[in-house]
Length: 177
Image (tube, rainbow, N blue to C red):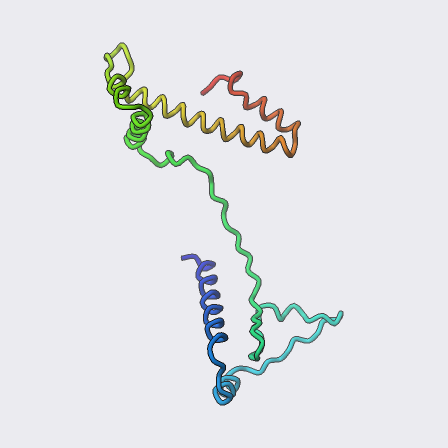
């Protein structure tokens, strides 16, 4: 567990305990006095030159009183953006072939599958080769659809740049890999 997550969990537990304590019955005066004896005395921060409290109060707890206000430190959480990688990148060749064949078989009904699983070696391609080709075509179409949606989104912000990008992405005029 990262230190950031541990810190957030710790703060959440403290807040949950504070809410549980504040919603419970009030403490007796004797217990309240004992708790106040053990804590250091609160010294309010000196006001700044403009009469505003200094920023050194940020992150320090509020004094014990009937006020349920707790001043928490400022946390800046910077999450890494997840990369949009191809999930097939981590598959072995055998697992990729199995996935392609499964998708190919699922796209057909029983009779179509029976007719398509016959082939003549050296004359026609095998069902596995057709499945791999269909899977590659499906992935290419999904990537083209994603890039087209990016172009559409860009057109709302900058039409001239979107037109240049659409021309560069014109899949009918550029040869494939």
